[in-house]
Amino acid sequence: MSGDARYWLRENMGTLFAFVAFVAMFALYVVNHSAGLNANVAQTAANKGVILAIVAMAQTIVVLTSGIDLSVGMVMVLANCLASQIVVGTPMSTALGVLAVLAVGALCGAINAMIVIFGRLQPIVTTIATGAIYYGAALALRPVPGGDVNATLADALTGQLAGGLPASLLLLVALVALVWWPFQRSVIGRAVYAVGSSEVAAYMSGVPVRRAKFVAYTLSGLLASVAGLAPRPARRRSTRPLQRM
Image (cartoon, rainbow, N blue to C red):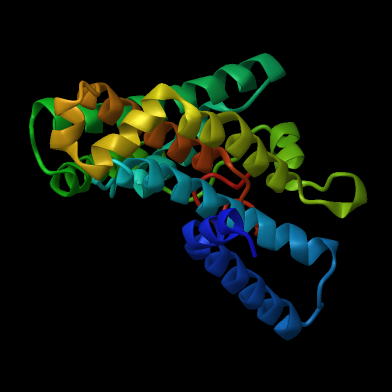
């Protein structure tokens, strides 16, 4: 094995281990599933896993700054409940509703960022407090279980593509390709990594620390709202807030 290959393996050992662990756990799940592995089982598993993956992306971006965002789950719930109110009707109104939900998620992240940056409060304290507020707003929007979104959009996100491939995986791939990879390779993305490595050293090197934190928290809120719009496992209608796209 060449030196470059050994270096790549050493740098990505954690990611490779996580992937192997995932494959092993999914194989165990399939072996013990009464129906085995088929398109419907894969679709259900994908619809569940995509939500966790998107929320993990949202949390990771903030963790890269050496912070933490404990409100991502509550932003997801708020987006979920808001979508049940406005992601309905005609295709135009549905599209505007989706944009509004994403804007609310980004706003929630921006609020977290401004409190952390200008209020100089610890991220864990800030996001616990704001998370409680966001959850209260979600309860105000949807105080009782129920709610649906545009059926066409829901079917598109929970259905299957050609060959039985779950459509929800396409959403995850699109987010990675359009958001995660460009962010990692952008100037502000490198600034986020620098802040997380050493905020003092980053500041002394001229890195825009405040801008990096603001973008990280705002993008985290945006991704959390995408998770709120993402497909849910199919269940009986009107048994949980926002029947699941």
